[in-house]
Amino acid sequence: MPDVKEKILPGIDAYIEPGEKGFSKIQMLLEATGGLSLSQVCAVTGLEGSTIQNWVKRGWVAHPTGKRYEEVHVARILIINALKECIKLEHIALLMSFVRGGSEEGEPIIRESELFNFLCEALSKMSQASGVEIVVEEVLRGYSGPAPDAKLRIRKALTLMMYACVCTDVKRRTESMMRQILHELENPSEILAEAAAYSAEVEEEAAQAAEDNDEADAEEVAEAPEARKTIAQTLREWDVSSVERIIIDHEGEGSKPKEAQDKPVNRPWFSRKNAR
Image (tube, rainbow, N blue to C red; front, side):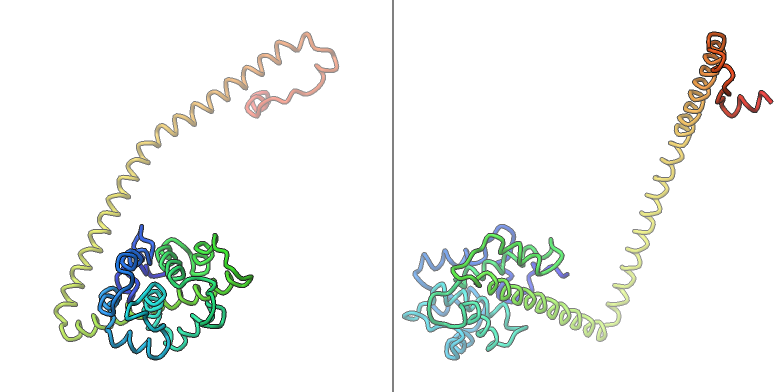
């Protein structure tokens, strides 16, 4: 899974750094200004003013209040900007309607700024988890909405949004690699130099690995005599204890009852061999 925290996701990369809480950066601006102007929204999101105005005109973003963009407007713009390369704009609007319970009217089951926070938190954890669904479940563990189906709706929407961001990341990585390959086709000397540097790096790593293996082998050889000594000592101790048992058994035979003396003695293998 690619590390989606790298600075390539449009409109969201600045909000998923470790220690940040997604929308909190913009929340401070909104509280200080009472709403952002169009130019300020453009500066925050990196979008053109005409693009934002078009989204408002099409109804994908609510009309600003007195030309000021508040929390609900900016959060919706950020979400659209994060998903637009992978999901059609009209489908993003339908997704937001699904999150709100099927209608743009009435009280939403979750503020879009909070949904954006969940998205940022989930993206920041992607490199530490084994899959999108696991991350989403972890992020939403403490969430409880105002409706019976609220958490299910948020889980489905957030999972879809996560996959969209990951797909966008993969698409941009692919485009970046394609541009690099096209550049190298036009400048073959650069790829030859890179190949030579790569070969040198591989040889250096192989030499280092061989050196590490030699050191490990030397340590193993140095430990071998001690291991043999330990084994020999164990055998000697076993032999001594076996002989002592034979002596004790022999000395005690005179005092044993007749039945016990007639019973065969289970002697060690070397004792039986010598007796023959």
